[in-house]
Image (cartoon, rainbow, N blue to C red):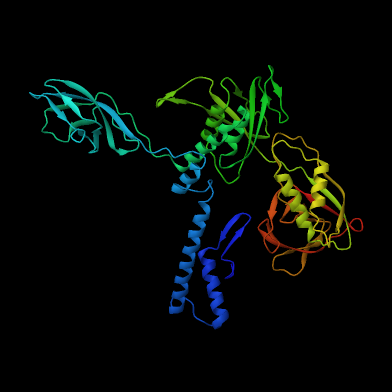
Length: 484
């Protein structure tokens, strides 16, 4: 529950807004602090109704702030706010267009007449009106062709014969619609506008590959891009087991876990940014998800189906080769530092671009920088740091947990006697070996059991609670931190 002073705050992840229930609870708690815990603040009392209304007013104000904050970012803005942000990149929303068609009009009057555009209004079988854009002169017995536009914008269908008469039926003019209408377009959706802005942002690349990379990176949900170029006359084997064909590129993308991106968005950008004749190679390895899209060009509203317009790319999957850090601690070292040290290394590794290896030197530097120091003095020295051997399969790193050998006990939740003991971070339940991490326990089959805020986890329909007593040291003043 949020306190009265924490209903809204700016964090590294953006703005945090407390939900309505927390707002109401915070106000109630404040009232009880002032007037006593026996005050009746239920919705059946006048005070309770007032508190509820006050919480609703505050909630509406905070949600307005939240909406305003979201509309400052092109990735989350919508409507006119997105239009304004895209305009800064010289990209404007495509407006809705009207369907149009040519009608054949036959005049059977005895004398020449000229009708203004306002008089040339026709109706279709659904009751929609279609209007001409300019005046038209008719001679006796003459047949003319007149272009008309639907009064309603958007994708309005009008098959042949759908538009059948003038609004002013008294005029001696016969209406015929020999062909279906050219269908208009709806206004560009927010997602389509973002994708087009992303592609436009990559248009200024100095090279073709630079423009492609820039356009892909500007897609909401793409965190990193690696384009492997093979400009030779023979195929090349890649580190992930795939083959990059001659005169082709191999595109690897890192997706944001929380966003779904249509394959058409990515496929169109890759095809349109590449030089004609340069192909894309398929992902044939198990180190990623193979993606493909059949590109269909559109020329003058007509789709052009041409062979060999397949676009391929790879959605990379993360790896986490175990990082092992050994430190010798000094006088002012605190075990609270384990979390900051591990988070520093995880943050560094998780930000590395696709296909960049973990090196001992870089990990050593990050380990030293993680030391908070005491009065300018180091609290530990790094003895060694390394990552387990692996093949960097054109992918990225994703670390989520760490462990330091601990001692303690495991209890069935609610019972006072321990079920088993924890030794150097390991324990056994039902003949299954477990390892204790900072936020979970993992069994010998690498199945993860999350820990809640009270260090409890559920295994085999039973809730267990972990109580730790310390960090035993295999070597005096030395700890080993394992990151996975």
